[in-house]
Amino acid sequence: MTTDTKKKPPRPLTNDQKKQLRRYGHALNPLVNIGKEGLTATVLQEIDTSLQINELIKVKLLNTAPLDKHQASLEIPAHTGSVLVQLIGKTLLLYRPNPKRPKDKRIIVR
Image (tube, rainbow, N blue to C red):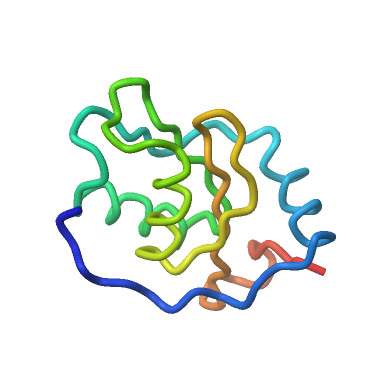
């Protein structure tokens, strides 16, 4: 890990909220792939930017990635201030609300 910056995580999600976000995330394609370089500052910045724009993203760990999926599922949310919604195989579904997005483009979690 090349960065020590950690962001404050959003409030925990209920099971119903996670279920709703999983429905939204089902049709998404991974926006960020983590390869042989691992979890670098550049990758974390890309995840952070994608979360800011989209609020809900998928991150894929490639077979060449040096970290395992459980390690990634702890480190990525801690460094990006996001919540792990789901971990299936080597794909993480992450959510971070963005109150600065226009109201009609926000993901409303009930």
